[in-house]
Length: 280
Ligand code: PAF
Image (spheres, rainbow, N blue to C red):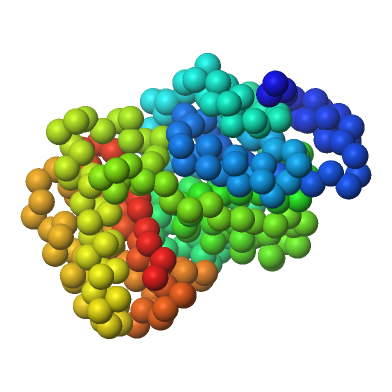
């Protein structure tokens, strides 16, 4: 039975009722759960005796004109998935539970969050770090699991945890993909059937660059060129960035280094913003 808590007080009471030696795993989400989220829950459960998830569509991380209002909220379906995954408890707060009237304290990471999605979505990572630190303070997990699909988010949270000495271990769960390579995302439900071929090109572009890397190409500009050639001029897709970055700092690199480099892409497919990445 997945317990459901709607208030901070309820989570705290449950947390304090656990034995002191009990490891607690946490998976924060915005709901609209899919197999990618469930794999994170399974990781949390495997690494700790007890797993708690949260579902909170965080208004602070959406910019004006983004999809806050239409963000999918299939709560009944989410609850069944959590139940089936053996998640012990769910924190399901309302907006005013996490952001009391007049809330004026925010967490800002100033380096890793700057480029890529940070440059295109001003204020987005400030919203993420603020809510994630607040959730960590409420849940006090030993480990927290985030999806590698949001590689920059993982790097920003790891930096925040290091810089602010937050006592939690961050674990990255692998990207889960559809059979055609499309990375699972709650936003995939927005895609029309005729947009799928364009959506698939993000993975194709990453794969092309990875193949070139594996064949010995290290030059970041050349790798970017190879990937972008797969996307340019293709109908229905508008590229926002395709970039070669240091996987931890997100700074640009001139040459891709084995084990340290992230290929990252963002594009609009119709009205849907998609991101994807690959570490090489
Ligand atoms: O990745 C997400 O779903 C969100 O950014 C997170 C980490 C739950 C914070 O709102």
